[in-house]
Image 1 (cartoon, rainbow, N blue to C red):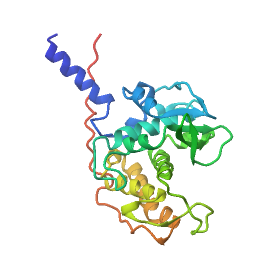
Image 2 (spheres, one colour; image 1 turned 120 degrees about the vertical axis):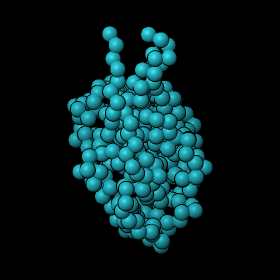
Image 3 (cartoon, rainbow, N blue to C red; image 1 turned 180 degrees about the horizontal axis):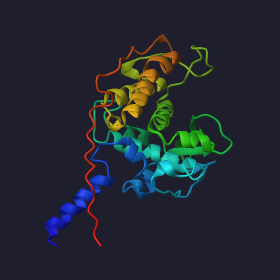
Length: 273
């Protein structure tokens, strides 16, 4: 076979299994792939350590499609790698879309925290434990049912946004109790100086309007409706309740939630004996 033809076939195959540069074209297909098969895995694991009760963890096992893995095999470590993989790709190379940094979310988070520490005894997320001189986000271990729930994008998106929330605390943003939740509120929503809950609101807005396009426009009509309704509820109900003096502006449903589907990976890969 001529080299140029072979290269063309290899490139077409890669389009099926890898996200385009700086993008996730179809979030459901993306999350059905194993993080352990991702060419960026070494970099992600080098930038963000995953520990359990302070001790380093081994690379988890994984089988595809991830959505069909048994819940007890879809470990916290694997779920964390999926979330970090989304952060790595979702806005790679973008700039000017996040008011708190000039670049993308991944590089900003990498500059703030050294990784994530799983607490076997459970508990909510918190910032931060210091390990080897770097701050680590703490998260409680999840049960099988919760991890199964988090295979789906709208639920994993909560994890992604929570990591950004906790990393923002490193910049010196404490919580208040003004909304009636002890140490669970932010006083003011200020786009020029977003607080931890403000970061979560902002990310949900960009996922809904497609500024950060992870391909929810490629979901089935039922799943797209669920995703759009979820993100809109986050913007208009969940996060505004966490503010007191000034709340985020009301959001409306965009005409094309998440953006137009641009998934071009439906071409079948050519196999060779």
